[in-house]
Length: 256
Image (cartoon, rainbow, N blue to C red; front, side):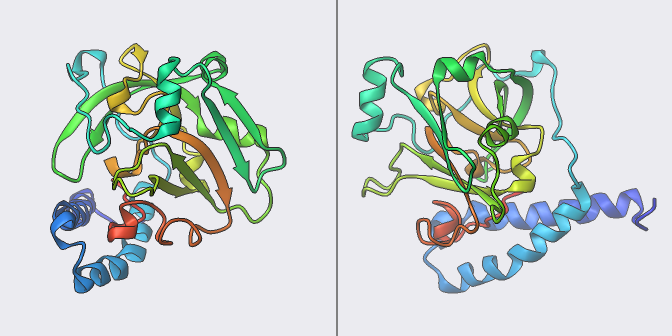
């Protein structure tokens, strides 16, 4: 091995990191109010990101045979948003839906659902890993995120992609959001998905489009996405931690 790791040592380190991260995150609902817990997560995050980048590079997440697709793709979190703008879209089967690409781009764009479905797509059968400890395998079809942001043109200074969503998980007027850096945005398995297991994505799973960022845990896969925004930082969004759950103490990187 050129980096000096023996295979067994590499697997041990990866398992230890993954186990520690998931172990902490599984209890986040109970511990998110603890200042000490949040401080521990924050201090570990930079090391977690650097080590995972070093070990995995830009490799693909494992893909599976169609025979391994789960009979039901288990929904989680928001499963039927009741925000007015989302209800208006469901009333006419998403015919008025438009996905916006904006922010630090040369030309803001928007795409109808039909336009997205007509674009060159990537198909992938991957495993969704939830921090609650369960997994499910699904077959996704969607437009590579790289395609959309390249069409819009990335301006100098852009470092992150922020996803704005229709759902209000807390029922307090705060819309769900999430973010990744440009390296993950350009990963070939990062897609704006519109199809699940051969059919339009159901409402419970994020209709009309959701992100599949296959090197990330489940909470980093935002559903009900209406806007993709390129930004120089994520501090001005939400509570400034990079995502809905990150604002409550979860790890921003969220890699697997």
